[in-house]
Image (cartoon, rainbow, N blue to C red):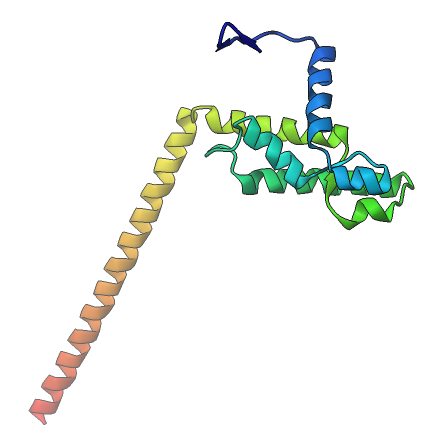
Length: 167
């Protein structure tokens, strides 16, 4: 919230947080679908709009990552509705999520951003260096084997040339 022209972080209760999220969902849901079918669901366009307005799209979360997350959650919701017997063709035509799916998408984006922000563990860095060292050594061995094969071929050619000269 804006207080005295600066942002201050405020601790919200779960009820207040969900009320804010519901307001965001209502502001960005698919209005055409709501008007034509009477169903309040959000499309990927609305979800990407929320992320853009919240400044959550950057190197940690690209639009393609958000799209992948959204489509995975939408597919899970469609499977759940099929299992529950709610076989609505309108819902299956395009990827849309309800409020709980919207919250699941935001949670997945938050987890992705948290994982990207965490520093790498020292053992992970060591493992990466060891993998790079093994790749370098394997490449070096391949080059040495290639050189030995080339030398052996040259020696064979030289020996064959000597035999021809002797004859």
